[in-house]
Image 1 (cartoon, rainbow, N blue to C red):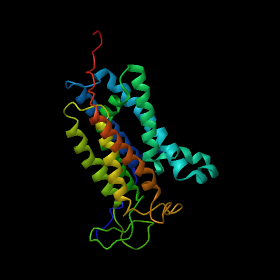
Image 2 (cartoon, helix red, strand yellow):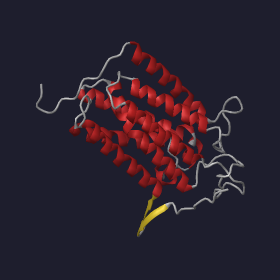
Image 3 (cartoon, rainbow, N blue to C red):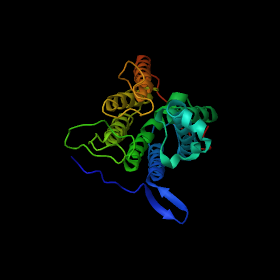
Image 4 (cartoon, rainbow, N blue to C red):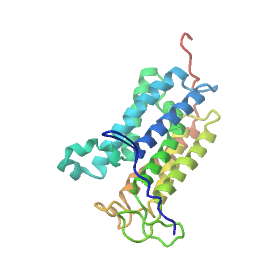
Length: 271
């Protein structure tokens, strides 16, 4: 059994202001996404130039944060927020839904595609490889917070999490950080280095994120107030993730059935 490091969730205290590691993980994810976006914008055959990346990241941040918080309320904790509406703004305590954040990002992608007259799926294909390391950083934030732990286990790397009882559990947050963050980033980044048919990168993202998340949910403890929500064994995460795998497979099929490649971005002044 490994010892849980029990890191203080507060990284820095500045008088009455506490800066939490969870929030810093989000900031790190945004910074990495911006840097990767700038790098990709400098490559040939990209749909965005450098000047557009900043707007894309800005609106993506808004969509992610608002969508993730609203999604958590709708999918996981509606009753608690209704009992204490101010808890809606307590994002430092966790309570951010990936699926809600994904919906928020989709709305941001739609807005940018309409504004800049770029095909929706071409924007999605550009964004997908930039975002996944942020997912991994968020899971590390969950681990530091000592939340979303795994089920009881006898594996030698099990940990006893504060507030989760005396039994060692899977560090499922780290499994997700590795699979949904590092591994998924490697898949998407390498795949998208060359021009690919529109929808294929987005499809790959949805399929593999869904596969990794669905798999890890088998060793992640279901939310205590929800338990298993379908068939006596499926968690809410699996119910929400299964459609992503199906959608990803459909997008991949459509992308390669009649491949259409994105047009390179134009710099200002070009016509």
